[in-house]
Length: 476
Ligand code: CMC
Image (tube, rainbow, N blue to C red):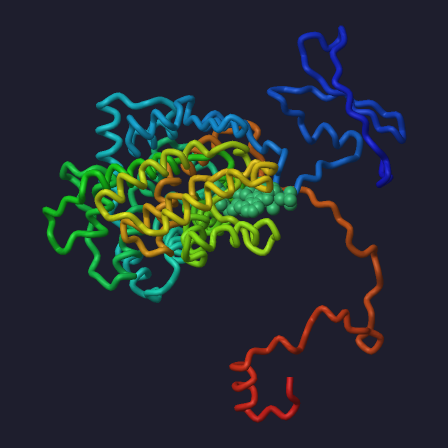
C-alpha cells in the first residue's frame, strides 16, 4: 500500500479471540487490509504499523513514547509529579537533593548509612582537573555560562579515556564500577564547574571544594560561590535549603528535551560526558531550561505592573510569548511552580523582595482569568518564579540555567542508567516523510537559473570593509 490518499480506520476491538487483551484493529480503507494491534499500557508498537506500509508522523513527539521508564510519573491533567512514586510536594518538604539523587538513581530512598556513604563519595568527586580550570579561565568573562558548560562537559569527557566507549569498546558501561564512577564524577563536578564559571565571570579567584567537613552538597556549592578566601565560611542555612529544594524540584521530569537528548546521544554509544554536553545544549534553549532566564528578561522588559494588560494583549496577538507559562505535559498548574512561589517569599525575607515579583504575580492573575490562556490550559511552569529567586539571591541572569543543570544532573544520570539496561534499546534514528524532488539529472552550469534562495546581499558592513580593504575589483 503506497497510495498517499489511503485512509486508515481504527476500531477498538474486544472479541473472544482477544479476550483480556486490549487490541486495536486498523483497516486500510483503500485495500481492505486489516491489522490487529496489541495495546500494552496504552501503547501500540509503531513498528507494527509498518505492515501496512505507513509510518507515524509525530513532529515534536506529541504522542510518541520512545521508552519504558520507571523513574518519574507525571499526570499533566491533574498536575501530579512523582519521583519513583513519591509526590514532589513531600520530597520538597522532607528530603534533600542528595537523597533525591540517590532515589532517582537507585530506585529507593537510602538508609542513613547509604546516604552518608553516597554523599561522602559524591563530595570526594567535586575536584575538577586543572585542564578544565584552564579552559574556564580562557573563556571570555561575558561568555554565556551555559555555552561554557556545554564545552566543559565535552572537555571533561576527554579526561577519562578509560571510561570512553570510543576507545575501550561499547561494553565498558556494562561494568557497575565504571558506571558508578561516571555518576560520581558528573554529580560531583557539576557544581564545581558552575561555581568556577561564576567566579570567573565576576573576576574572583576560584574556591576549591570544601569536602571532608560537614558541608552538604548545596552548602559546598554556595561556599565555592561565595567564600572570600575564608575556609570557615558558612552560607546562610535558609538560602542553602531554598537552593537545595530548587535542585530537588528540577531533579527529573521524565522525557523532557534534554533528558531525551541524553538517551538519544547515548544510543549512538558515545561517552556519558558527551551525552551530557548535548543535554546541556538542549537545556540551554529558552523553551526549555533557558526559560527561567527568558522570564526574567521578559519581566524586565514589561517594566511595570501598568504594562501587564498591554503585554497580555501582545501575547494573544502572537507578538510576544508569555515565558514561564505553558507546558507540553501539564495542562494544569505545574506542582513545582506552586512550591517555587512559596519558596520565593522565604528567600525575599533574607535577600529582600525583588520588585519584579509584583509584575509576575499580576501577569499570573491576568493570564489565569483570560480566555486565551484558559482555553489552551496555559499555567505557570517551574521557570516562572524560579528566576525571581535566583535574581533575589543575586545571581546574574545568564547564570540561572546552569543552576537548573545542576539540579537536573541526577535525572539525566538515572535515565542514562535506565537506558543502558533497556532490553529494547536501539540507536535513535527517526524516520522522515520525504517530500523533496524526484530523481533528476545534473544540470550543467550554463543552463541553470538561480533559485533565489541564496542572497549576495547578506554581507555585513565589516565584511564589506575588509573586502574593500584588499581592493577586490569585482564587488561581492
Ligand atoms: N505563551 C503564549 N501562548 C502559548 C504559550 C506561551 N507561553 N505556550 C503555548 N502557547 C499557545 C500556543 O501558541 C498554541 O496556541 P495555538 O493552538 O493557538 O497555536 C497553544 O498554546 C499550544 O502550544 P504549543 O506551542 O503547541 O505547546 P507545546 O507543548 O508545543 O509547547 C512549551 C510547550 C513549553 C514549549 C510552550 O508552552 C512555551 O513556549 N512556553 C514558554 C517557554 C517556557 O516557559 N518553557 C519552559 C517549559 S517548563 C520547564 C522546562 O521544560 O524546562
